[in-house]
Image (cartoon, rainbow, N blue to C red; front, side):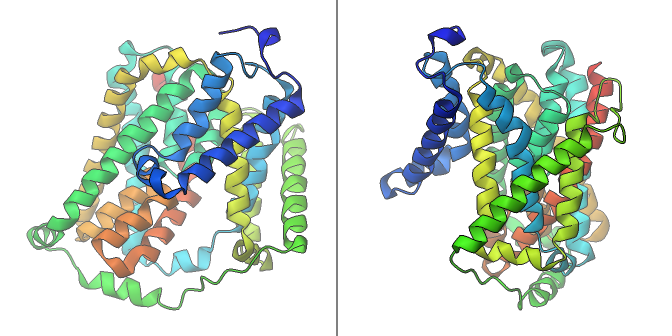
Length: 399
C-alpha cells in the first residue's frame, strides 16, 4: 500500500470530489442498457466499495484523510435520519401478525446464526473477525445503512470490511437466487405443510389503498432535507458525546457512535409519524442512500485489497449462517402454517432488504411486491436494535 504522501490526490475536498464522481459514474453506468445485466450479477455496492479501494491501492487516493473522518462521523447519521423519517410505520402495521411474525423469525435466525457460525469457524479466522460478523449482521437485518452503523459501533477495522462485503453479496444474492427457483414449487410446499394461503389475499387487500405518489424535488424540499439531515446529524453526534451516554460492554458494543446512531434512528422513527414523512414523496430516502453510498466509498478507500484473500473461509461461515437463518424460518412457518411466500419474503426482508424483498415477493405473487417492500421496512426498523444484540453475542463468542 503506497504511503499517503505518494497519493495523486491529497487535498480533502479533492478526495471527496473524486469519490463523489466515482459513485456518480457507477450509478450512471448501471442504468445504461448494455450494462444492466452486469449490474444485476454484481450490484453497485460492490463497485462503490472496491473501486475506491483499488484507487487507494494504486496511489490515486490516500489511505487516510480528514475527508474519511468527516464522512464517517456525519454522513451515516445524515443518511439514517432521512431513511427513518421515510418509513411508513402505519402501513407496516397493516401487514398483519403473520407477515410481521415471519419478519421477526428471520431476524431471530440472523441473530442466533451469527454467533453459532462464528463459534464453528473461529479458529480459522482472525481474532477481530467478530467485528466483521457484527457488521454483516447489520446488513442482514436491515441493509447497508445498518451494516455501516454497527461497524462503527464495534469499531470494525478496514481489514474486515473486504471479506464481509464479498460474503454479503455472494452469499446473500445466491440465497435470493435459490428463493426465486423455489417459487415454482410453492404450491407443493404449501400443500405439504398445510399452509393457510388465504392470508395472502387478505394481506394484499389491506394494502390496496397504499399511497405511493411522488413529486419532483423543489428547491425548498432540497434545502429543508439537507438542513434537517445535517442539523440532526451534528446534534445527535454532539449529544452522544456527553456524560449522559456512557460506553457499555466488554468488548465495547454500545460506544459513543452507537448512542449517536440510536438517537438518530429513534428520533427519525418518531418523526415519521409527523408531516415530515411527506418528504419521502420528494426523494428523502434517495438523498439518504446517496449519502450512504458516498460513505461506503470513503470506507472502501481506507481498506487493504489483500484482505479479500480471506474471503473463502468467510464465505463458508456465511453459508452456515444463512442455513441457520433458514432453519429458524422454516420452523416458524411450520408452527403458524405460513405459506412459502412468507418464508421467502420474511428471509429477503432481512437478508436482501428493500432492494430485493419486493422482487422476490413479486416473483411469488405479482400483485404482492408492495408486501415485500413493507416487510423489508419492518426488518429495517428491527435492524439496528436486533443487530446490536447479535453484536453483543458475537463479542462474547469472539473474545
